[in-house]
Every structure is written in structure tokens, then in C-alpha cells.
Amino acid sequence: MRTPVIAGNWKMYKTARQAAETIRSLADLVKGVQGVEVVICPPFTALAAAVEAAKGSPVAIGAQDCYWEKEGAFTGQVAVPMIADLGCSHCIVGHSERRQFFGETDATVDKKIEAVLANGLNCIACVGETLAEREAGQTFAVLERQVRNGLSRHLTSARLVIAYEPVWAIGTGKTATPVQAQEAHAFIRQVVAEAASPAAAQAVRILYGGSVKPDNIATLMAQPDVDGGLVGGASLDAASFAKIVRFRG
Ligand code: PEP
Figure 1 (cartoon, rainbow, N blue to C red):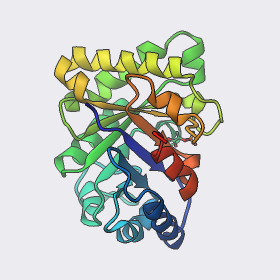
Figure 2: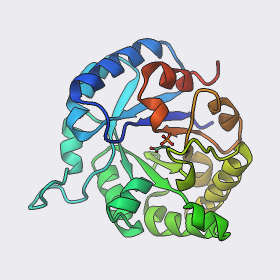
Figure 3: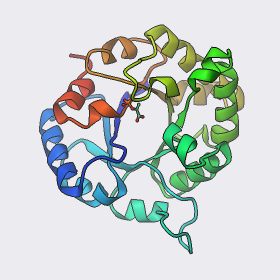
């Protein structure tokens, strides 16, 4: 049995004070929820306040990105030991916005995952095709390339979580249908089986991301290979995110 993960990606929203307020409300709303791992990933500047606000609650805190070197002359970068030092337990790697706007590649994704896992954190590694790639019939080829080139050295780690995020569904209000999500997740699991082992494929959690909302999470979660959600917009509001966390009703 794979324990579901519901993770919120706050992107470049919320000051430290706003983050703390939202997390305190969320902690209240998800109190007593069993059998779901809950993660919130605020901006770097709000991580310390978020960790403090989440203390004693089931809400884990993660960063949205990291750099792979542990320290050095890398202006503007944040190292994984620094993220761990704040009390964070998770880090997102390879989000499509990082790939699209900040030059993230499968090779840098691989190095970042290595750093995250080596420092004892959980890694949420993102893959997903663009609209042009889907329309050109390249979805499976893109997913296979991203998993094999970026993730394959790390697939046996219990601390690696994969997020399938079709780029055309992120922030657009267009959700993949449950059938499209299931098809992509099953494909990714098959690639994991081939690249690592059938046991690793059965164990790895694969989250769906792309316009997840309180009213579509249950049908997505009903798919056998969907093990949770990576939620952008709908994670910014505590009440809406709590409803997603409580997808079982
Ligand atoms: C995301 O940021 O990973 C995401 C899926 O965003 P949204 O839920 O807003 O589409």
C-alpha cells in the first residue's frame, strides 16, 4: 500500500507572515486526518516561519528548488544542507517552471535529486510534457526521457516521490482527465520497473499535478496509479487545500 501524498507548491506567493498564518489555519483544518502525508512548499524566505508554524502538526515543510553544491561561490543559490537546517523535510526538483524559465535540464534534475536524498530529505521530482509535445504524440517519449535521464539513479530510494505534471494543465484550469492521468502514471511506473525494478515501481508514489482542485481530487485519486497530488493555485488557501487533503470525504 502506498501512502498518498498531498503537496502544495506555493510558487512565488506569500510573505513569511502570510505563510505562517495559512499554515496555522491548515494545521487546524487537517487535524486528525490519517493516512495522508501533507506537505507545503513555500518560497525560501518563508521556510523558517512555515516550519515554526507547522510544529506539532502533521504538515511537513519543503523547498521548491535547491542547488546541488553544499556551499560555495554561487550567488543567489540555496544549498540542501541550508534547507535541512531550517527543519524542512522535502524539496521539489525539476518543476516545469524551473525547466521552462530557469534552464533546468534532466542533468541538473539528477544532480539536485542526489543532493536532496544525500542530505536525508524527501524529493518530489517533477516530469511532464508540454502541449506541443502531447499534440505531436510525444508524451510517452518525453516522460521516458525525463525519468531515465533525470531520475533513474534514484528510483530505489523510498524518499523519492515522482510528480507527473502535464505542463498544459499547470495553472491553466485544464486538468488531465482521470484516464489521461492514469495512462501517464501507469506508463511512468512501467519505466521505473524497467529502469530500476518491479519492486521500486510498486513502491514509488506518483503524484498528479495540474489544476487539482477540491472538486476533481477524488476522481483523480480513484485511479490505481495516482498516489497523490502536487497542488499549485488551490494550495494557497487553507480551506481549499484542506478539502484536497480530505479527498476521502
Ligand atoms: C504546480 O505548481 O505544480 C501546479 C500543478 O499548479 P496548479 O495546481 O495551479 O495547476
